[in-house]
Image (tube, rainbow, N blue to C red; front, side):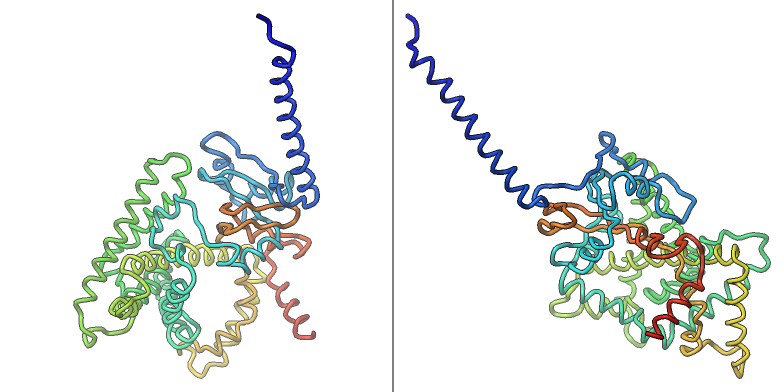
Length: 419
């Protein structure tokens, strides 16, 4: 028995009706997006290879202090805002001054601090970089009690001078030195660690430094192999550092106030932990100590190593810096007396020379809601990698940005003083 024409037509009619509805919906979506183009337009870019993404290109070593080749190539290809995949994470990269400023200005409102899992695995789940709002401000105030301007003026400046002089004298009898390694030991474990935890590197045979070195060697290795040897060394190094810090904290808790020669960061943390409702837990406190040691270890040593290279390659800058310090010494009643805060503030050319390079080429954030900017949408939950270096190395902002030219800041200061 053959189907009637009506029975045959019904399925076709339903299909046509469904197609018309879908077409209408698509037309409405397209029209809405055209009305507000930024509502559905993601930045251009590429996710790279499966699993690896574009990590290999991003982490490729570059001997230059210029903008990372990975960023420079994609800036030319896509513009200052683009998408990528690094360390198994889809990210939006910003080399754009307007977007970078928006992210920093809207911290904790439109954006929040975020770091890749490989970083958090070694920095600690309870790290300060995962805290927000009042907790973050409270922890920051704890840090400023020891490393704020007042303490720098009162004590740390003289401590740094004393340590630097002793270290430089110890270098004289050596045929060669590894600058970054020596600076790390000098600044970090003779000054910072002593201020944080009253750590005596000579008494412990440099154990803490060795564990930090193992940690740093494997910090970024995880993007290639999850269980690579270097990553295992990094995590092991962190565990050993944390174990040493916990042992030191336990020992400090047993001491009474009159047994302590000076107040350090451990004391501030112990006082906080004794509160009825402490703002931080013991794990957070230890992770904070680890992060402070790491930040001092890497950024300060890299910065001093870079400035030594710049000054070595620029005899004119070295000569002017030397003359500035000679003038300060001649004005002192006792040339061997410790440096004063006023003398430090008078080192104008020295401060110009220290505006040298970006030690941290990128920082990470996460969008807390949809953000529309420059015709693009950054969806809620998007991971964002910012590069302040691009602004500092932009030739339209600074003439010859890759040239070490301390005198440019002298000119800028004179212009500002005449405004």
